[in-house]
Image (tube, rainbow, N blue to C red; front, side, top):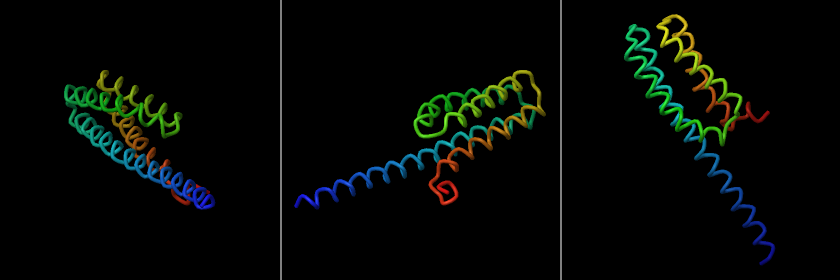
Length: 129
């Protein structure tokens, strides 16, 4: 009986780790999708040179990011989060200064980072080896 209890403990720990990995990946994917959708609204407003709408959309993005950031910090690389944070700060400055070209570039870079972070954390052969 003692022999089985050791195996059961190992299986229980493996199940907990696997379930935690799946749930954290689903959270990363879902929250990245939400952030990307919000950032697309900002991009569309910048493309139409609607600076009031782009600023309002950015505020909504920033509120969402502040909620997500603390959770992402638990399960992702902090360097990636810092880079995204800097990109969002630059985007905000470009929106405030109504610099359309640089705002587009920065929004595109932030979008790429938002999509990249969950992919980088995904358990794949490429990420393992």
